[in-house]
Amino acid sequence: MADFWKVMLDPAEPDFVLYPRKRVPKHQEGNMATLSDLTPRELQILHLILAGQTNKEIAAEIYVSEKTVEFHLKNIYTKVGLRTRNLVSVWAVRQGADVEINQIHGKIGRSH
Image 1 (cartoon, one colour):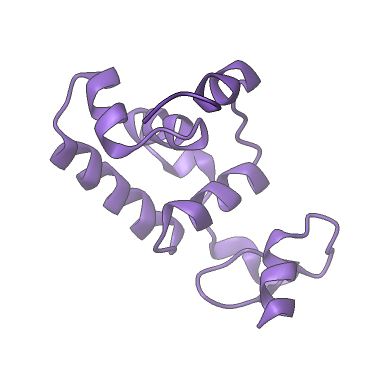
Image 2 (cartoon, one colour; image 1 turned 60 degrees about the vertical axis):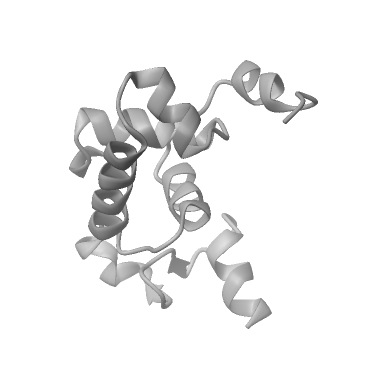
């Protein structure tokens, strides 16, 4: 099992890519979703997830309900074939998504 996660998380691994719940050779990755398959709102929410925000924080920032955030997250999970925000975050970074470092630093050390 540890090797499976290493393959998923190791960007230096040339033969396999992150894919829904299994490893797939690179030549078969054509059916995977890309960032361009997400709507602008889904991309916005994905960016906020990468910045470490909770559903509640995302909802407050973009002026929607938490249920609306959950709806968009479910759509993201379905499109990319993954079931957790952590796996979606890994997928997004591997797809080339970026997050501003100052947003991450703002999350460190704050009181909960």
